[in-house]
Length: 109
Image 1 (tube, rainbow, N blue to C red):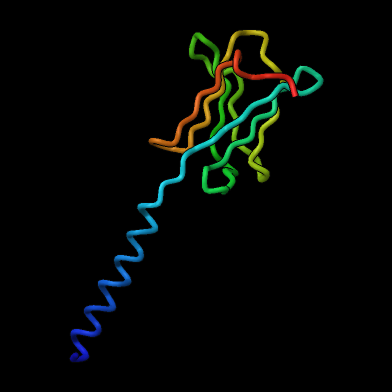
Image 2: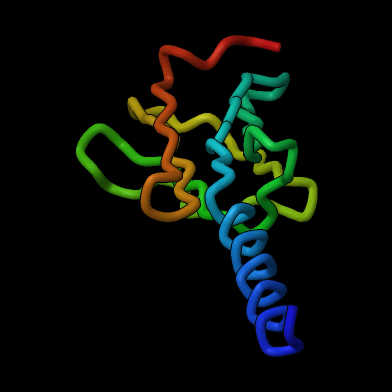
C-alpha cells in the first residue's frame, strides 16, 4: 500500500469514528419533586448519565407566562417556591431535547 493510500484510509477511518460519536443519542431527562417548605426541586440531565448545568428550566403558568425563569445550577438542579397558580416545568436543552412536567405529576419527596 502506498503512503498516499494509507493516509487516505486513515483519514476515512478517523472521520468515521468522529461521525459515529455524533450519532450516539442521549435523551433529555428531568425529574421534579415537592420538598418541605412549599418548595419544588428539579434535576435535569441526559440518558447517558451526563448532567445539565446551565440548561434552561422555566416554570410556566397555564396562561403561558413565565412564573420562574431559571437555569440549572452546577449540580444540575433548580429549587424554587411552589407557585400558587397552576404551572408546568419546561426543561429545554435545545431542539429535540425538551421535557415538560405538569404540576399534577410532581409528587412529595
